[in-house]
Structures are given as C-alpha cells and as structure tokens.
Length: 87
Image (cartoon, rainbow, N blue to C red):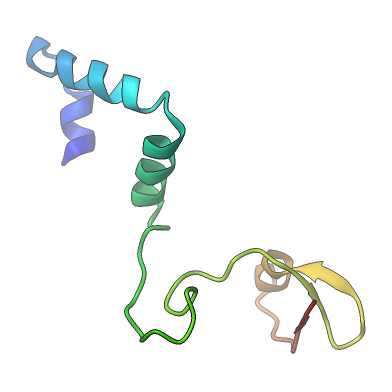
C-alpha cells in the first residue's frame, strides 16, 4: 500500500515522496526498506540457540565434502544438497 501511495502522481503525495527520497539517501533506512521490500527482514522465533536461527542462510564461504571451497548461494543455485564444513 505504501508503494502505491509513493507512486500516486497527485500533489498530496509529493511531500511523502520527498521525505522517502531523503530517507533513502541514508544507509540504515535504505537497508531496512530494501529488506522489507525483498522479504529479507522476515525471521521466525525458533528460540534463543543462535542469533541466525530462524533467519535466512548467510552467503558464507564453505568447504564441501570434496574439499572444494565455495559459497552457500552457489550450492543453493542448483538445488543440490551437500554436507558443507564451515571454516
């Protein structure tokens, strides 16, 4: 709904667009809004075991079973499972 308001061409929304434009020039608001738009801000409360529990897998460097070093994203790209060992 907020995106629709920002895209409205009338004068009533100009102040809103100007304010959001100024916010997006700052790092923290830009990161938070980008995370909200892309769904990266979603996390599930699965307990207190680890700060990453219930969040997306970070794109870390991993070493596969055959000793090859790669990134998590490259392993997920082809949807092939493996047993990585974190460095």
